Image (cartoon, rainbow over all chains, first blue to last red; front, side, top):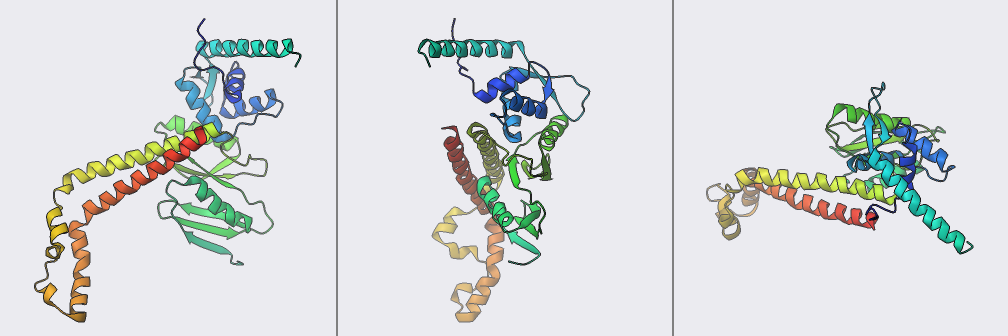
Length: 103
Length: 212
């Protein structure tokens, strides 16, 4: 299988995609990423907005209908889920290499 | 510096980081940015005693759709950044921290800073094309031959160049604004084009610096 040219993903992209397995608006994603990373990854507002724009362009996430008039709610797409799985497998391989070398 | 209010005039154009540093320098001296107008380059700082002085940070974004613009502003608000200047038409947005819990910066990685300068690059390039488009219909009115070979003919005052001393000087200075006005529009546009190219090179450099 050909590896996607988008791999490896940045930590930020990876965590945003994980956060968007469940739908959520921009600020919710920021909070979720901080929570998932136990406070290690904090995405600032400008960076978050730009990242959403990018992921929408890549069609890895999409805006979904919501009640909220002021905020858009996003969710991961099938293409986004594929990339996320592919990256996860890559990371697993890396960890396996690390384990095999007694790291 | 014990004044209650300080008014400064400065133009930063595309140097967002320098502009932020400029605003920060007053914050460090205990002044809060009260208002800013990037069209006139006017900054008003007000002495803040003891209270929390918010940091001001700048983003550049042009968003045409109403609902998307609302979404953009809401996201910054949710994250503790209050819009103090900026609108749908002006791409430059000034945000201030709501309180000390707000993050220090609007951008937390180099990739998104590169994105900021990429957007600014698009802005400078569009300015260049607008100036070029405006220049096209008026360029023919400039008499280049006359300008470079015999600029004296741009002045219409009879006998001007035979005048002497203060009489010449006053007549010359009197007519100069009219000469500029008659020939000015194309030159102003050329200045616009040259400066937008200069700005474009500057932001492109910044973009490369951050995407490295």
